[in-house]
Image (cartoon, rainbow over all chains, first blue to last red; front, side, top):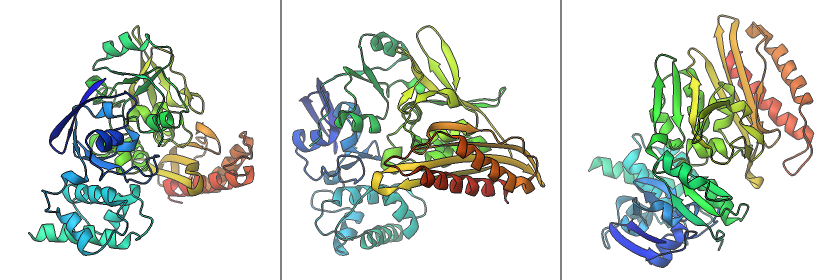
Length: 155
Length: 284
């Protein structure tokens, strides 16, 4: 079947098998490798993207389901080399080590900044429940997002 | 890498389109959000010849409040994440929101739908327990008619509901309830990624007098949701008697030792959840 997906503002049209997962389309058709394949069960969040502005796990969706929706991957969060505030904060605090979970935390952090009214440690911790990190732990990540929120509000 | 089996993908934008397509396949899988369904496809637990995507049917993406009957209708396509902002202010809706907000994480709730959570029949699913407790109905449509099935009767066994081929869950309806205290409890087994027990309860208490008390339970310990009849108690001072009756009830349920635990463990978890819920709704 032929699908046309809008990823980071750009249309990607391709002939695919209906069983192709969204994460595979993003990585193999669009060539955007920042979205990772982790647990493949929807637990780890390494495949997280924004789908019409809401976080979604692209390993639990068929590519065909995403037709007509706007998809944003971790590559779409930054403007060229200019990282967004969450990515910058994660980087400055050295919150990530191997970086496999970067898509999950960056996407969720961005969503939190744009959608949560009150952003504090507990709120961020609860919202990050669907993202797993197995090297750095979560403290620096949570602090980074809280700090990014404070900086955004100052500006 | 896990890859689903081969199937045809059909996207329908209307109920007529659904009815027209669904009978053309011998084993169609209906998805709206598809989070669990896609996982089951990847694990090849199911091998449908077609996946019918109903997420484009706008008629199923509605929330109606019938003021005359004082009933709420939640369409199957409504995302779980939206329930908090969509549902009206009443006790039944409060319990539905409590249960929906514990489904997975935000990324799952933003894709997962009411219809998927209700239809799947996984003992660990959240909405069915709350819906059973409040006495909700599954509204089932077919090309010929629409029928209402109490959610408590919607499941034949785990992962098997009463929907016949050609039927679709249009949504769920329930009577609004006022002045109740609500409680929603569950116990998660991390290493098995499953819920052993889930309990939903609500009670209307005036002074020390219990006007109404409703409870439902599910989870791997007992399977799909069961409605627990504890309506005969009249005073919050009866909390001890109610708990005794719940123990008797648990002892009457068919349970067995399995990978989720021994019978003793399951009863201990369920009774603890039930007691916590009772204390919370009775304020005892």
